[in-house]
Amino acid sequence: MRITNNTITAASLSSLQTNMAAMLKVQQQISTTNRLTAASDDPTAATQIMSATGSLRAIDQYSTNISAANSRVSSEDTALSQITDLLSRAKELAVAQAGSTATADTRTTANAEIQQIFQQIVSIGNTKVGDEYIFGGQTSTTAPFSASGSGATLDYTSTDPQGQRTLAIGAGQTIDAGHDGTQVLLTSGVLDAVKSLSQALDPSSSSYGTAGITSAMSSIDTAFGNVQTLVGEVGGTANRLTVTQANLDAYKTNVTTLKSDLSDTDMTAAITEMTNRQNAYQGALLATSKLTSLTLTDYLR
Image (cartoon, rainbow, N blue to C red):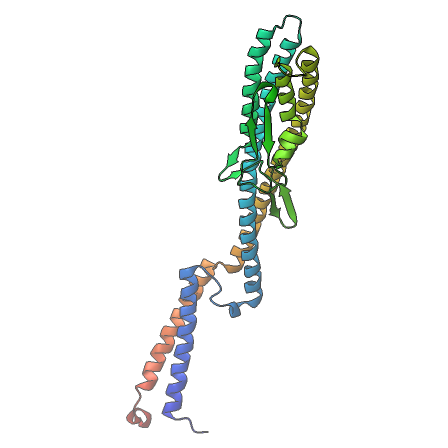
């Protein structure tokens, strides 16, 4: 087989291009700190990196959901604490007005405060976080409660707010971010208990008097106990969110480390390879330049 100058030149140039491509690839790995310039460099690692990237996106979304749930849980905890204080005050007034020293005047004065307590509870039932009523259930953009009347005609209306906000906080894990208005103020008996006390303190009501006040006190005690149950459930939800977020943080650290191990450039090894590639390229370039500069006279010497 005859090897011509053109063949030698083409082979030399091909070798130079191969060396240059390898050198540029290492340069890119160093400059981008990314070991893989294409999925074909390491298909197995590329697949694992894509999986890790997907996991990190999911973790970030779960953390966002937990943050939203924490906001709602914190707001509900504050609301329930306020309702607890208001029920305690209503009970104090009831005890005082059920005694033998109570008069029509003291009961009228107490009733004025009870009606304010009722209005405050309704206002708490309409607590908002952002643009949503946290106790609004499925109709979270509509105020769930409103109050009307006074004394014997004191009353409320509601949208019958039911349904909790369910959020995903992990793979296969969901959580109800708080209670709805029906659970907090209706099923618990809070509004009805305070309403009955106000009526028992109003002379125009059929339930006016000691017997009505005593009955209302019992309802307030029941409502208070129901609210404390809700407080305990909120505390349990808050604890679960805290533990879940801690687990997500640990998992995110592990996934991030795995992704880094798979994709990040080993700078020491890359710089060493870069130096070797440069030396090989310069040597090939020198050899090629000498080879391609030969003339017929050089061959005849």
